[in-house]
Length: 634
Image 1 (tube, rainbow, N blue to C red):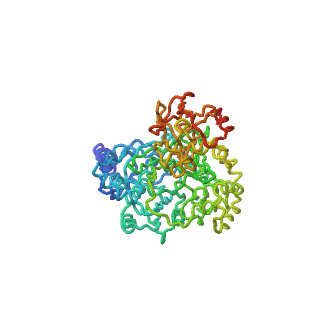
Image 2 (cartoon, rainbow, N blue to C red; image 1 turned 30 degrees about the vertical axis):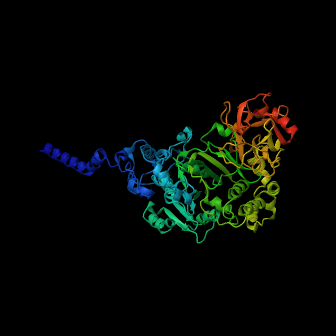
Image 3 (cartoon, rainbow, N blue to C red; image 1 turned 120 degrees about the vertical axis):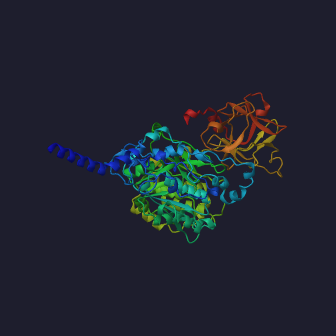
């Protein structure tokens, strides 16, 4: 009897255990709802004609409180079945570094196919080529091709392999992403938004602010408001300007209403790449006065192919305030995945602590429309106690328009006024080098700069001399404040043909040749004033296109190509004795066919009469010194 009672008690205990834990065990072992790889919704990426958007939440694996969780919350990131069901932000030890990659999202993107997927080019049919012009004219890029691409397309991961091993601070600040726009095309604007949302840890995106600089296109008004009201969970908002203000003040308007801990400024036609956000935020977590810029990749304006622009250089300027670049330092080259210091930002893509931005006074509101703002902000970041770095593992693609499709609202030389304003506040005695190159800047009214000078005094900012000696210490060597003399300038006449080189104001990637010399025929037009500059390149006067030889074979063509100042394909020397123009890298000499009026490269021969060239003005002393120059001496 006692044994039967014990048996009955065991059954009761077992039944209670099964009723309590049975459903949980069955769900764990048999329910596939947590296995994101079995959820084909995430692979069912629908394409809607004309690029009309889908709610990104519709196509992402669902969890309790929203779409795809960022896998940084997982300790075992490759075990998809053990993804937590609750969207909570974990707590980590102070100073802990973690891997922020979303391996689930990366795996899903690799399976994507379709127009433009994986960052490939969109090739239009012959019929479609005839349809693209109308959209091209009003956007400055091939918007017809953009509309064929899904808003959430996958792009290839082109980061340095070391980036895949990087870990960043577990505790990062949240961000307000500020995106100014004016009449931006629908699909490129929303692709910018979706790339930021889809490739960022959800809890780090506090908000995305689309700041409308008084757009006139209808889709930028109520249709955009309506779309945002039903998509993205309220994280994306529009801020409207009541009149056209220009890029600088539009950014300021967005920053004023932003409530995130970090401000990230982006353009309205970008695509954020794999794991782009943590590398931007990690240096700020260590020092809130650090400003971080991503690598800017190229989204081709014609076919939307995604490609690298380069693998890094330090931002700089010349003494006309053209943006330039300095080579990476040897210690930077040793660690290609680590942030490196940069004197000047390229423009509008960067992350800055909200606190530091406003301590600096934000952008100078006295700067008009655009131009000079990257110098103003860069100078005061460095001079007032901060620093600026580029983060190689953060990459953002950007469409560089083929042309500006709409006029700017500026009056007169607003860029020159901006430059003078920056120079007067921040550059001290170095401003004279700018004015020597651009004398008319002295007569431009910079407006009231008392508030900007007060900020400089309040923050006890360092002099510009400190910036030039400690931050941009190698800039004067590459872009000297006072330019060394040219080797030669004026007409460049072939002594055998008695014809002159004439580039005829042609553009990049175009060939040019010989023509009758305008000095002998004053009525003729043309572009015959050439310069053999201290950069050791050969170019038409006052132009940034250089004689470039990339083919080192016999009769190789000479084309105009954007001057880069890095020698290579654009390195030329003049032999005072033989009158030859030597292309140093190819070891070929400039030659010609007088009858066809063609220019090309041939093996050097001092007996060849067609290789002899006469400069109108020659500095023989410089030419002789340059003939002895070796690139190792640079």
